[in-house]
Amino acid sequence: MSYKLTNTTVVIHVPTNTWIPDEPTLPERQAYEAWLAEGNTALPAEPVYTPDIEALRKAAYREESDPLFFKWQRGEATEQEWLASVNAIKARYPET
Image (cartoon, rainbow, N blue to C red; front, top):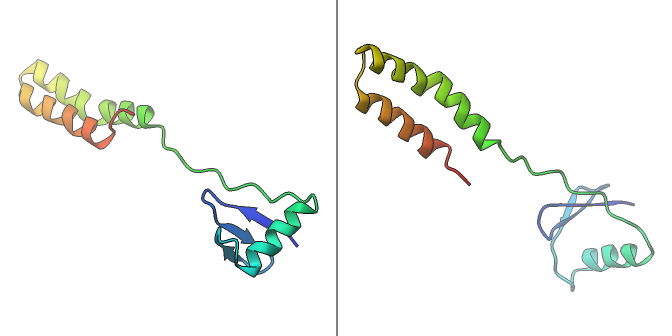
């Protein structure tokens, strides 16, 4: 018998893929707590994906706003077009 942690208070009973909420009166939760008390350890939770916002923003600048900047420098686009592109990227990928 094994259990797996989640990124919440819910625990998964692996053999049956049953989700067990953090409710002490549930027999399933009591069985899990007893299993832990016997010295067992639950499997770790899956890591949470966290996007690299800085890398995404830099890539967007290279692909979207930098070309507009150079067009603006050559007189082929306006400064407002370039700044609008920069602001759209900042809105899409806000600093944390």
